[in-house]
Length: 235
Image 1: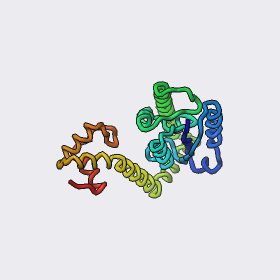
Image 2: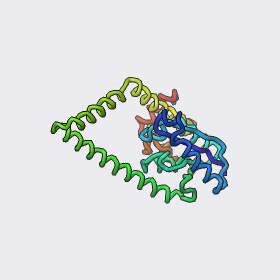
Image 3: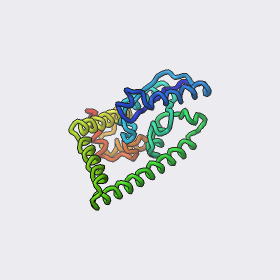
Image 4: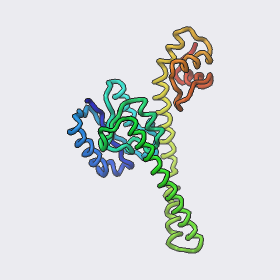
């Protein structure tokens, strides 16, 4: 089976040092030998897992190649794609994918693992918030060590909210929207080819063919209008 390997590390520093990346490659190498996979291409992202899957340049390219050639996507661990069960479910509709640490798992099993991963993420979030609340309480009581830790955390948060980071986030969103519009353009063109001349009729046409919006819902006239303007299409 021809597969496309996708690797993700959370920071650029990890990406440059190979920390975490080599482990992922080893997982896939071992699974490749036992599962008779042929890795035909590899893609990487050096981004946090909090970035939506379709906002990652490397993953988008990997998905596009898989869709075009009928390849299967392979990751070392499921959380390299996402810890969000909704993200996993969405990706399952786009391509087939396998996980090197559980190569025999089918879609149903992967869905369960994704749900468990999301639950663990939520548990971690709750524990982190509780720990931070206790730390702030100690700082307010006059504990110098706690006060210093809170100050350091606030400083890191401020530095993280730079104009550059905001620009990158906006660029990622813009790229995602453009990629989505490119996928729906043929479907809108097909509806126009049928001679439809209203936004509502185009929306009905797309919904009838089960083409979803970027959020996975049904089309409305205003959404059709926005897409047509972005694609420079007219009746």
